[in-house]
Structure formats: structure tokens, C-alpha cells
Amino acid sequence: METGIEHRTHSQRDALCVREEPPRFAAATTEYPLPGGQIVRLGEWLVRRGVIDRRELFTALDASFRHRCRLGDALVWLELVERRRLELEVHRFERYRARPGGA
Image 1: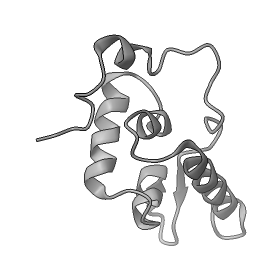
Image 2 (image 1 turned 90 degrees about the vertical axis):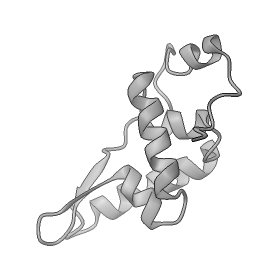
Image 3 (image 1 turned 180 degrees about the vertical axis):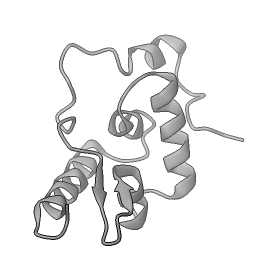
């Protein structure tokens, strides 16, 4: 099974999540409740919006767990989503959460 990270060296992978400043989209809360109490997280939001598929989500979740970084950082690092697109989707996610009945 290809994970999409084999083309990077160990030092590049290790440097992925070691940074002085947090990523620009790090402030986003990563979940919101749906009517009926179901919680949807940022990764599920991205899948539902068609930004990534479920396999890419699990690949990025695995990388974020292994390298102790945020999901968004892993998605960008694995080149599954461009940073600008991710920032736009996080903004939409936050805007959805802020609307009445969205959170």
C-alpha cells in the first residue's frame, strides 16, 4: 500500500512538524456538532466537501499521529491539499461553526 510519503527523506519527515511558529490555520477548532448531537471533525468536513477522499484522510491522520503534528500540516506536507485551499476550507469550516445552529 502506497502512503505517499516514501519520496521524502527521514530528515524532511522529522522537520515536518517541528516549527517555531504554529501554522496559519492552527487556530481552527477541529470539530462541530450536527443536529442530533453528532460531531463532525475537520477531516470529515474535508471529505464531505470533496477536498480529499477517505483514503487520503486516513493517510494524513496516520502521518499526523506519527509525526505529532496537526492534520492540516500533514495534508499539506503529503501534498494532498495545497495550503491556500486548506486555509479556505478551514475558514469555511469556522464560518459554518459560527452560524446559529452550526455549533
